[in-house]
Length: 205
Length: 205
Image 1: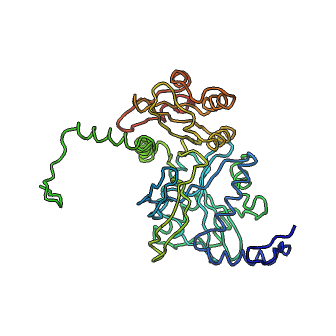
Image 2: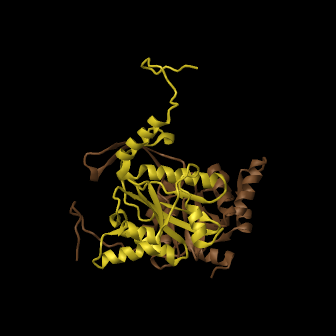
Image 3: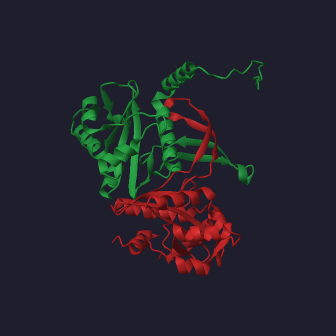
């Protein structure tokens, strides 16, 4: 079946992988500050887990301060003015084999270190509280230039955060990420199989 | 110190409790369909738990589909058009003594039954998945006319949901809520001490 676009251009299925990858790279460039593709990959991974009954982990909705809502009809309220709020917790949480799972995901364009300014004091306080309650808490760190992703347990992140608070460096060196974290191999389905790392670290499998 | 409102009216501190209570009742009436006061009471309760290191449980942000954002400056993005989305999960989750906690809170003005239309199919599917993963999942039901609040475990809710799916009644009778649920005594601080019920049901204390 041949499709034509409304402009009359013929639809040609993209059988060459290269252009798609190129488009992806451009998207990375445009959205790199907002962690869009990392978020998409994690949402895809979480859907994979939920669909297969492996784990129930979701991204929390973006916190928004709603200021003005139009109610033309009750069923079609339109938010006319709202602002992004800073999250007071981490973005992802859920349950896996009875354990509470909680994490934040961030990426950097730097190759040699991961800046700690990617995290907020609120989130650090939240992570500490989760650890006190016996939850499994970590961060997923993406080095976007190298396309490398690591899982770093919150306990280690807290150590590096304390070092910064005590006047030390404002980032985690790549060597430290490698030493204290676990690299997550990238796949297609699921894309970022972090549950395997959790199985390994917490002997849950 | 005497304050004057901009309109020149003198500020008189409200030392009489009655008018405040009256205002609250009016608010209940205005917001009853949106569960505002139940939400406020639960947020207050969750803050109480977090502040004292008792549990880390938060309400998820309201899911919003953002359509149009104005970026006058990067630091002050204004959402100009957005819509409320239906939640695909429950509203509250977190961790307590290592256990994953997940619940939804709803209220009704009815006195003799709790309508099941307060829950969506998505949420029911989510609750099932949470139970499969060994999470603690329940609903908090408020009968607003009587100011009575019950905790009903998801396993029971699922039974009543199935009954409806099989052509049975579209609500849970008040008697059933009393039989299968646990009433949560209302307090001042915290207002809805549901963790005590969890301790009792799951022998966590």
